[in-house]
Length: 184
Image 1 (cartoon, rainbow, N blue to C red):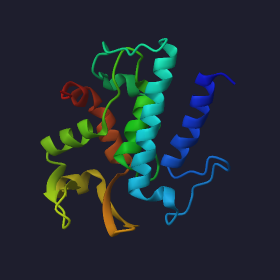
Image 2: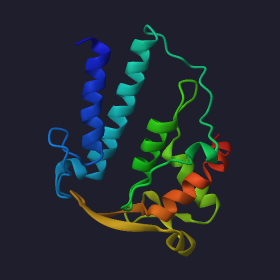
Image 3: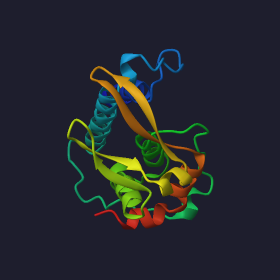
Image 4: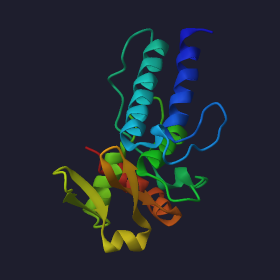
């Protein structure tokens, strides 16, 4: 197996684990499993992005393409988008958008661009958690849209994550063009 295919194969495993799926069986792992820890999951998503960039380097003969345009999209490009039936994390929705839509000549859509746009529209708000770190949570407008929080248990105790139901996912996709224009 050549290096590019080996990296892509490994990256496939990493992506599945980041989504909480056992790559060997295709089954969801229990919430208590280590790979469902938010810090581990974020790390796995990061490693996957690094491997994507490494694959790009292999394809470009070791030269990094710095001339990529920022992410851009039109709502009609997503007419056949398949939404998650269950509420999902913004990072997973963004990953799917990038896997399905991202073109070779543009950068990936960052999840932070979507959450920042949702803050600007009043669906999310910034707040300071008990540990002093800043985070985002849904406003009443966001709750009405279908954004809610789930509480997970981590090694440092419980923590909250925003999840987006099907209606909230559709709202994001319906506004993807405006979101892409807001990217700095």
